[in-house]
Image (cartoon, rainbow, N blue to C red; front, side, top):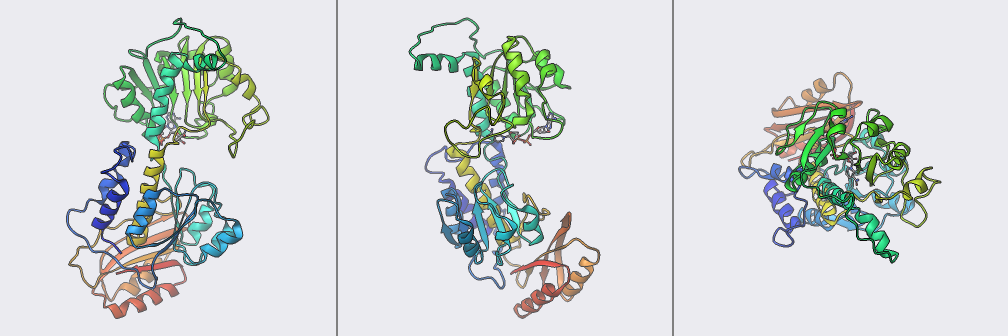
Length: 463
Ligand SMILES: NC(=O)c1ccc[n+]([C@@H]2O[C@H](COP(=O)([O-])OP(=O)(O)OC[C@H]3O[C@@H](n4cnc5c(N)ncnc54)[C@H](O)[C@@H]3O)[C@@H](O)[C@H]2O)c1
């Protein structure tokens, strides 16, 4: 097992900092790397009763992740595609970690066979391809990468603002069909125009900085109070944003409150000739109402990257009225940019996802840190100092019922508990403890006692 400093080194190699400067998104959300700068050397931990860590990577997971795992000395088995169910059931029996993207379904049936599996890495945003509940109940922690593509989305929106303002989509379609149409009417510079951002989170705030640097004024509306970046200003309600913006862009999650957040009354409240951009979730804009507002000339253009129903695979003829009843009507409008949910789809985002998820898996395997897990209580302990000998880190995943801590601390009571942290999420709880004065011969006995407790889901000891 490697020390945190070695982990830093491997991430830096994975980043290939001396190579392409664009290997990783420059989003501030990438600041996760800074967590791994220990002020002094820390102790590398070894697992008890586990052989070499074996990791199965499917669906062409990015090379940055492979580099991280190989630098850790893990045995990596890599496939470019997903595996058929029966083959996956065979392969998963043996491995401690698996990395997938969106096509591999990790169902209860498959996970039941994963006897050694400790952690799942979804090298993507979504996690609905994994049975998260069953994984948690089996003591398997799941990580994903929700923010590695924020910058990619923000850049796409910048491109769309200019494209809409200059009607570039229409001009390009006309040229492709042989039409020369040199016009300047209703084509605008974006300098001095106001961008209204709804949802000032990872993407909205990135976009704010980029838009200001291009001379735009930025206002934003969010349900929480968020510090403004640059000269941007938070407004107190949605109406104020709508009536003052030349461009309105949405960057909110899909919730009950955000369903049809922009519908007929909101379009009516917007400036005449303003523009709408949605690269968040398909349900956030009432598209039939948008179509009507565009036909009425109220809205001068729209860019949509997400839709209530999206095809499950690539192919011709899939974006049709059979999927969304208004599809052909929307396609017939002028100055509408339609993209197939590609806001976050860049090489940089894939590389950053490889690093972020690779990093999470490594921290969980080597140190038990579950910070950022999607199905698990988030628990972390500071690293052990190099000179801390005879110390064992206990990782104990258990049912969240009364009496557990008493039983566990009774087992640990012959030793000194240096630090301990426990948290729960629903039925699952996770306890981490560093205990000192543990002789190497005590480790097996501690492990066996913890394994025999009635509340146990999984036990790991690192020393
Ligand atoms: N098009 C793509 O390819 C793509 C890629 C990544 C993310 N996304 C989507 O973009 C959206 C934003 O992502 P993010 O990473 O910036 O999320 P985030 O969680 O960082 O930010 C969302 C912000 O929206 C705010 N918010 C929530 N409900 C609101 C409401 N009713 N009104 C106003 N503000 C509200 C939150 O307070 C938060 O600040 C998400 O829906 C995400 O799924 C799309």
